[in-house]
Length: 183
Image 1 (spheres, one colour):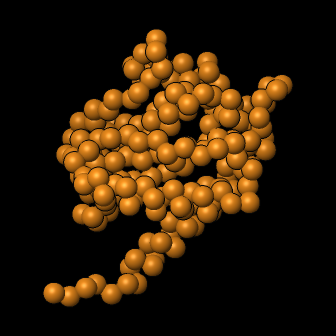
Image 2 (tube, rainbow, N blue to C red; image 1 turned 180 degrees about the vertical axis):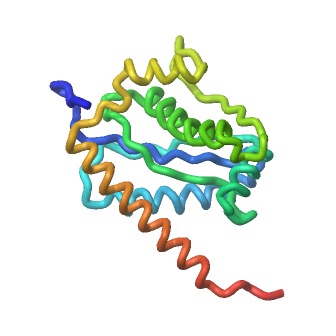
Image 3 (tube, rainbow, N blue to C red; image 1 turned 90 degrees about the horizontal axis):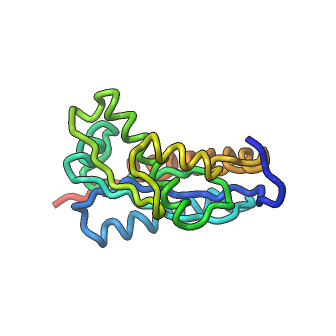
């Protein structure tokens, strides 16, 4: 991947969220805040072009299948990951790229039969004139240079992603060590 002249070499990070459409707004907001804080901590000390939270709402039945597969608790209302994209993209293209990257993971699980046969139907927001068909959407993102990262951008993302993953593990350990309230 090459860095074209005049383009910012820093990666733009998208914090993607697969979220339960049926979840209470307060629970989603709290979950978003925790994930955004984790992303900011992971990116501290690294040069990034920006950080956006990109939502991918999914049907409750599909989200429950995902939660079951990932062995997440019933309290889980959203699942997050962080991806790098090229910093030259506009807001609409960033949102589409983030949604597409998150959707690819879900589509892969569906194709492998890991969601118990529950269908995955997603509505990805696309810029005017773009198709929502996954293969055509992928081609548009390639043409837009969505994943054209500089070597510096790749290294930055790897470091941020490593820190993101370690913070997530720390949070999970902390949750497991907390006593369960009794009635």
